[in-house]
Structures are given as structure tokens and as C-alpha cells.
Length: 226
Image (cartoon, rainbow, N blue to C red; front, side):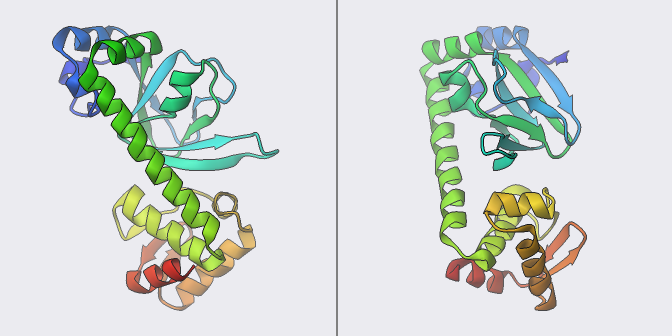
């Protein structure tokens, strides 16, 4: 772990910019920055939580073992807090967080974080706003995956990666075919077959885990029709 001067950080959260100087000084004294390689666990399900985790850089999967096998619940892209509702409401982590890409996270003492919420209304409002926005996004992704057939789910997932995660037409899938299928609720074989069909129809180009969207309009139509 390494200390970082929060006042000088160019990747401050929308909430931390609302802190006054003495609060930023206190944040610096109770915050440590940690780097994670892909595959490394940031925090583990059922472990005691003493910190709020702020994702400065990278991409993280939130997952759980409560369903007899590892199940991916969502992706979180920096900058963002990780599983904040669970951390504030309970001292035990309800989920695990694992780095998918090289990741940098700040670990903030939870007691100091809660103190800022009580002392600084602007800080508290920004936290509530972020929680609300993340909840809406998470609900929409889950709803889309639940309501659609396999083709629509795969199309929706590709558009989600392109627009929400990577902001690019070409990207590397963050999951294996098996993980992608588990996340979407379809089999690995169905994922491979549908990606192959999209490739043959020149909707996408795929080379291993690298995907390039060639016909976004058609992909949108498949997503909407489900």
C-alpha cells in the first residue's frame, strides 16, 4: 500500500471534491492506494470490511459464490466506489471484487468516510446521487438480460461493453465464453454459436476475445427485438 495526497489527486470522486481542506487532510491520513493485477482479489465475500474502496483506474467484476458456483453480478469501471451500499450497511462483505484489468484502488477508513457523510451535506448528497445512478444502471442491465432471448442478450452485452465499459467499437471481452454465458444466463455453447453467427453475418469481427462491431445498427435491432 502507498499513501497518496488526496488534495492533489486528479482522479477525485465527485463526492470528495466537496470536502473542505481539513477533511481532505484527514482523508489523506486514512486512505491507502493499492495496485492490482488482473485476477487479483480486491476484497472477498464474507470477509470483515473496514474500508470503503474507491476504484481510481481499471475494471472490476463483482461476483458471488452463493449460487453453488461463482456468479458474476456486474462490472464496475473506474472511477467509482465498489459495493458502497453493502459496505455502509454491513461490516461483512456480501460480494467479492476481482480486478479484470490492471487496477488502482483507494482504501478509505470506513469510520472516517461515515464521519464525512454526517458532517458534510454536499459530500453526502453526491454519495446518494452516485448510489442512485449505479442502481438504475444495474437494474437496466439485469432487466435487459432477463427479458431477452439468447441472440438479444449477446447483442445487448456487446453493446454494453462497447458503450458503457470501453467507449470503443473494438474491445477485448473481459470474460471467457463460460463466464459470459453465466452472466447472461445462457450456455457457453450458445455464446460461441451466436458470436460465430454474428461474425459470419459481418455484424462483428472476432479474433479470439477481441471483438470489433462492424454493423452497430443491425446489432441494435437484434438487441431491441430480443
